[in-house]
Length: 351
Image 1 (cartoon, rainbow, N blue to C red):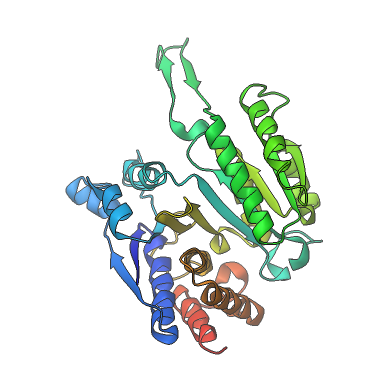
Image 2: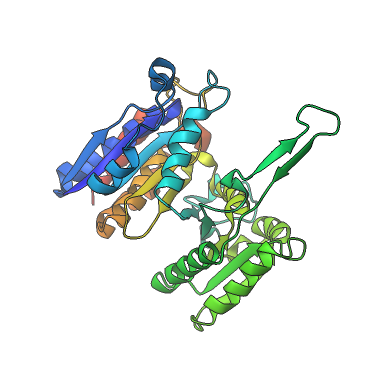
């Protein structure tokens, strides 16, 4: 039996999580997979009501009692500081040492991409984003805050251990999945200390995988080339901030944030899976949110838990509804969130 924590969060996170859970229940009932889904009400409402974000002991509980965590999205305009989202999502990522943020960029149908030359064959890569270091570790401060002479410092942290393990994870993935090229994105021509470390370690690890082509590009060049020639990419590895930016660009190439899935991983440990579109308060409660990103994230979770064949069935069901146009408005369809989730569940049981 696999125990999965379900945290819908806020806004459309609640709606897309409902459809992701429906898929997991279909998997459990139709394929006989033993999954225990445990629901948690952590989010804006609980924070506003009880001043609780990530409860004390939550990390230990997840490490001890759960195999995976699924979250919807966090963010609420009533909480300007976004404290609950930072505490919950950041707390899980950093507290559980989920150093791999894995984001697949896969075009599901040619009509979804804004690229006039884009097609499914040349938009199919994954991004390994370092998830626990870089500029997002909140190291820095302000001098003379509020004054005309104010100074703000934000430090980027790169450790040899952190850099090596994410680069090694990218090459390991490429080797396991038959990918022939790993590309590093950095800015070592300007960031000559931290990103020189990335270049140096990348070269060392790449030598252990002579069958895989290793190349490095500056981040600005890669942002351009992802639009001009996305087919050159198979596996990209980069730091926390650059990965954050590149994966949103990748989401645009594949049809928008509504179809983008992600995993926050520490191999061999409890890990976290989530769509990446955010809580979208303006869309919440209207039944128009796209559940594909959430459901694709459950496929990644099933794969991580050892159910590779079933994960592939979920992916095939997603591809089938895209081909048939059984999708939400953002992808040119007419279905509601619930109807789109039901269509995927229906396709899942056909094979």
